[in-house]
Amino acid sequence: MKAEAISLTNVRKSFDSVVAVDDLNLIVYKEEIFGLLGPNGAGKTTLIRMIMDILRPDSGNVRILGRPIRNEDKELIGYLPEERGLYARQNVFSTLIYFGRLKGLDKRRAQQQAEMWLERLEMTEVRDRKVMELSKGNQQKVQLIAALIADPEIVVLDEPLSGLDPVGARTITNLIRDLAAAGKTVLVSTHQMELVETICQRVLMIYKGQSVLYGDLDEIKRQYSDNTVLVRSTADYSKCHLITRHTPFNGCMKVYLKDGAEPRDLLVWLMETGSTITSFEQATMPLEDIFVRIVEERK
Figure 1 (cartoon, helix red, strand yellow):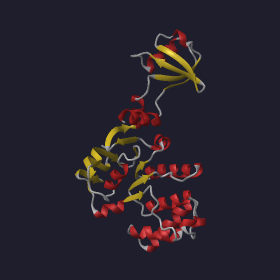
Figure 2 (spheres, one colour):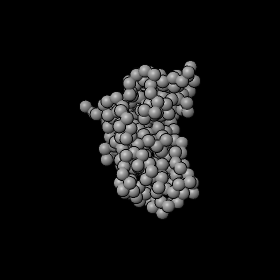
Figure 3 (cartoon, rainbow, N blue to C red):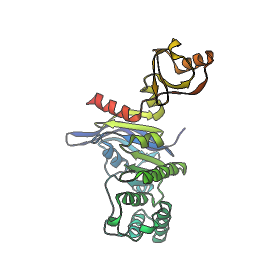
């Protein structure tokens, strides 16, 4: 059985007459990269703040590492907020040491960690520059280092690729993977569907404070597929009784199956006809299309 890093049970939070999070349940397992999705105003930030114990729920339970969150548990969580939380007139190195000391590191350990992370992200040349002098991408990297400097068990990242160019985005994406491989739990809140599809195993989408999509990403994409298969083969598809239509698509054939027909049935037919099969995969709906479809349906 997988160990739970974060769990929310029937959590509700309102501000006056506005319900920000409504009876929400969530489990994030240890060592996984979990995606949190939702349009602006959906309740993602409120949810994160309850996980961080910045806000307390009106009802329901929040548990961290299998227990109700305690003050000392806050040191186990590294948080990258969407808003800039750096001291613009301070230099990079002293800023990072300050955040390390806030997380309980002694000065020497904070210096070691700051040096290690600056080197890892190839930023040693900016260590003595003021934060305000850095590009938006480098400011984002400094803020990420501040979230990681105390070696937290759980990492909460709100729009981690904000302000980054493609090279920087790839660096941080690989870093997120490395964190999970090193045993960290990573919760990523983002609008960037490509990032979620690239690195997340499971996702939660919330809309108006409610869960509208939750579970294994691959399974969700299969559920929203239109029963089509992408095939490269020598077959004459017009002779297949399993197909309603077929159209060229990105160098292969997109084959639409009849109701009740399964991709494996088509594969059997291809093999029985002696067709040469170069590639064969079930088509799935991109996460961005699923996201838009759900939001449009609930407006």
